[in-house]
Length: 177
Image (tube, rainbow, N blue to C red; front, side, top):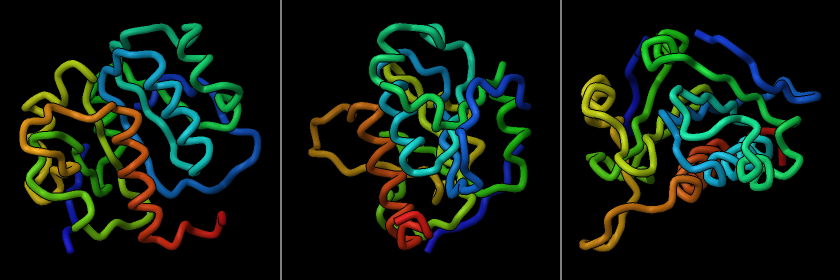
């Protein structure tokens, strides 16, 4: 039972879903690099009701063909917000419970009690979350997925899916089932 951290704007809402007032979680991708991963995460967020936040610089444009292909036609059903910096993004989530997801996390993701409104931040594919972000999150909220001893990392979109579905499962999948 791990809870509690309060952290620290929104520049452009890229897409708003057609009809939803449901937002169980927020997913933050800090400086994502690979368009198909982000496209897959857009689709995941559209199907789970999570809001997606992208912190610049991005390793692609929001019009990238690979991003659009991976997200299929789900962009219109996802809420996607871009932030010019981590400081701007963090300010938006001040007072919310934030989990940093990293191979360097100290807490297994499945041993945490999640709540509606939780925020999950994931780092870039090639380097993970920087020390300044990890250091701003209490140790119990630095979560990781277990892997075999010599493994380096999992695919970003797979990791986001595992974490969001575990958190959502704990909340009985909300009222959306």
